[in-house]
Image (cartoon, rainbow, N blue to C red; front, side, top):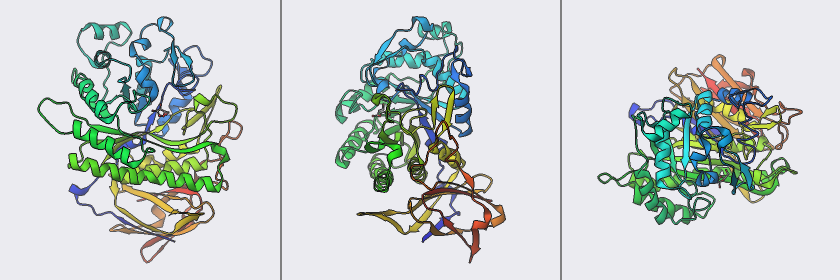
Length: 505
Ligand code: AHR
């Protein structure tokens, strides 16, 4: 049994908005994400617009992708942006040392990335190179993108076909600089952040939101705390002329060892659900530290890498991180998105890793074929929360018990939009049993005829879509006869291993 109470009466000063950027994405030069994924080239027989795959753009627009992080990841700290501009035949060929030592031909560079964002109608988020790049290089990249005048760098952009500058808000100053981005200490990185970000200038009316490298949540909590304390202490205290951070990044993967996604069993399922729920604890711990330095919660947590990390699919290049995506991944996604919604005062953005063919993808491709993963469908169902007001929700639920693990079975979040339409998203992580749910919505009249619901579920925890059967896992209508009103409560049975999104007018 689960009893849920949702409050709808919130004083305007107490209202918290769920940023659409929580539903953000990440595309790295890794495996088949960019090349043979998003980018097929102008001469490809696969339908494309200036080299960018049309079916992928259409699918991503449908889920309202709000932003895209690029070019990495670890790749960002060895990327030199000047390699990726000008005529393609003149662009240098480099070794992608992080991801399999393959040749990077730089055909997808700054202009192609902004073209992709314009096609998707989403905001660009660039991660700059601190690990192996110079301050001059980073500041000139910003000038190339944003400067309106006739400096030599801006003239180069015009010569390369883009007369008007682009606009960019989100700018990352390095990636995982405690690891692949330079193996730095928190103290050293914080000083470097101050130096680099001093020269990340706001030009021609463009305003940057500067994101500092934060911790990785899979490391011990005392290390996480030290990293956050140090970075916040050194970079967030306002002094005259000192550049400040706007966002602190956080990476956290639900890592599960070498087993491929499709080989999940119930024991492993319980482990990954528990790991996914750890995001809530991490955000609470990090927010507590940030509150000491930033009481008004202006600085955001930017969870710019998250998702499931399984063993690669058999027969694929281990460095390409190509994995299938099952119902288990869908539940991992829904748990995270609900946690982000519930932490929306601090979580200003989150980016699932990664968009196409890498880790917990939205889309998988094979030649001209493509399929939408169960995770894609979760983003499609959850997009209704974007920009809504969060509704405080108390969930009193039975636990799902597996071996020595005992974890809350029902998790979720709720929001309301400007038309007074209410959205409730719920996940039941018990893979064996449906659960009776009662929802009380304070100060709100629920009418069954005004209710619409969609469910994502399957009989198997490893159910997934293949190129032969691409619609095995997809949302279905959850019909109104499954709901009733008893003593002002909305009553229904939440199926096992399922995600439900309810809309009520
Ligand atoms: O997303 C894959 C990699 O995971 C990224 O490049 C890196 O930032 C993280 O370790």
